[in-house]
Length: 163
Image (cartoon, rainbow, N blue to C red; front, side, top):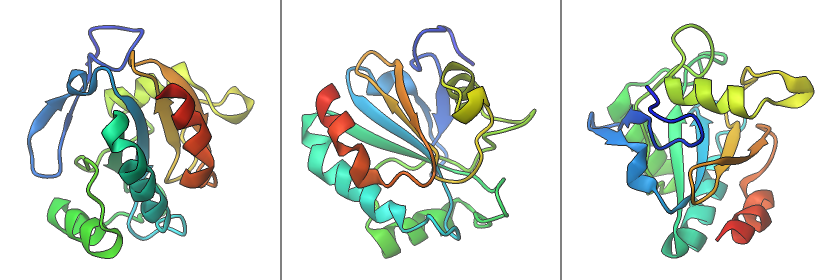
């Protein structure tokens, strides 16, 4: 649930290891929130996301990964499998959260907020596929939404501007 309507800081999410984290823990940081999947054609973007994270983390940048199985059932694993896959194959060290829905009646409240606040192409709110990305400024406000085909390295200039 959100206690505010102008930032992401009122939301909570469960990490892969089952801990509940308030997104206010990321207050003052630039965030890239991404719905992810391990068996998707875009899965190699994990490498680019990790590179962005490595490049900018010291300056207050975080990538937050949210696995989702709603698109072609491309995230079938449980939390342990997802974590192991990300670490083993892509060296992911940025925060990964528990598998969620990003569309529909069971969509995580954070993603309901993100999609309503920053509609995609043609004003459509629904996320179309894995690796849709939302750039969040240091005040918890959504700056931009990126399509799944947008490679992480092409977001670097936008991240840089916010840092």
